[in-house]
Image 1 (cartoon, rainbow, N blue to C red):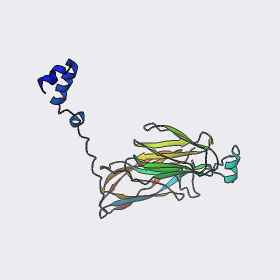
Image 2: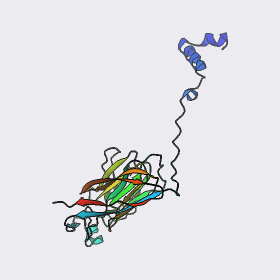
Image 3: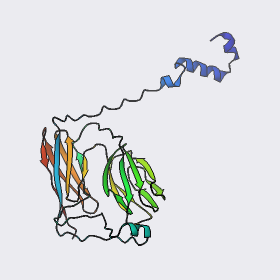
Image 4: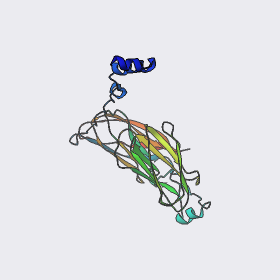
Length: 258
């Protein structure tokens, strides 16, 4: 810097100029580089294992709970014989809507898929009633009914949201940022509407169907703790060890409420 320029600078400006020169003159240059993302874990399909199972109720099968939708004539017209999805048990004791997932034992990085999971509101009920979504995966919420709904998610580890959808066909997307099992959803307009989401950091989860069956596919060999979660009946866990190419069975049994 020339003496003529130095003479024209005030003390603070001169000090700033010296600091910039000492640091390379650019704050961006001094910033620490962002840590690279961990590489995605690839499960070798030649050694991948799987688990299938059935979830049953131990005890008397409860009667189906009917829903009264007369408060909203639009809902009542769309659903002539509505039933609650909170406890769906077949005549043989098979339980639907039970989440089964790998709770412990899994290592690696499993990036979220870009394809969204869809939560629909149709017939004034949430479909699906229980679902899984990965951290960072889009959740698209759709109102297929010609009536007002509001989607009220009430997580603990994630951001709560409450979004109105007054028009049929409305959609909005949400992305969860943290693992959490389970996140309850409700509609403040229609008190019978509820759903539950499992937000996980891996893709190894499933929800039992009307026959009580579930399947976990593509697991790397290892020793795992599996957990089955039902909104009314609680949780059950078991440990399973999978060798390469294993296909094992893991059944769960829940006690009927007394």
